[in-house]
Image 1: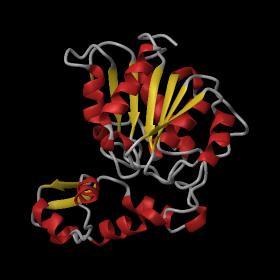
Image 2: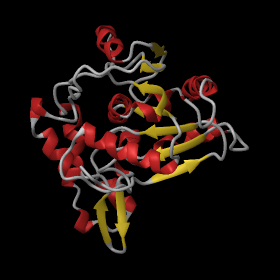
Image 3: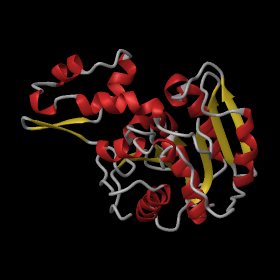
Image 4: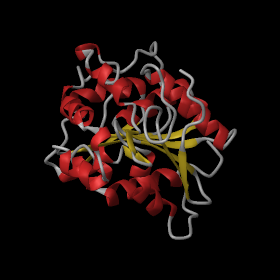
Length: 274
């Protein structure tokens, strides 16, 4: 998969480099609050790069989904941004899997890894997202007159989920479109138990011995106790931290905990060094 340089947003002007990778239907800017807090008021705490993954946000689309392809695209973007430097790579959900694959396939780019509420395993299918996908596909884009009209027509009852999904809706004059590659994601969901997004690739027994912090929401079912063995087979130096009261969107439910965790991580990685 070749998508070209991914769209990014930079926050901060000095300090260790930190790359943030979002989840399915997300965008790099979903990490803005955390990145600004990490960079600090003077912007010198960290140089954060908020990445739109392929098929998301303002980044190019791909023809088929591949974790290795996503990781390659992120690697090329990070290497172009800061040649020869190592990064703290932070990934949530889909982005967490991409971050793990990136670390295993491009280890020279990574100084520390932070994985947020996802495990390196096959989750079976995308059934938990099927309703969201169908709501998005059924929205009559050609009839929309305003964003308020789109919000009124969109059936999702949870206001937070509705806002999260509708961030993907963009207006071009009188025309509306989805920024996310909705049809690619729909096609993957239609594969059922063969979903590539729900799975985790076999990378031939690779492992990475760098420092890993694994944040999991105590109210989320994405990371179970039985996942620890598989995680540590890939990343022996993993430290699992369960965040009390947080569900799957840990950085939204407990931003202070995530920021403090990242501050401790970046203190262990001087700028431009591994």
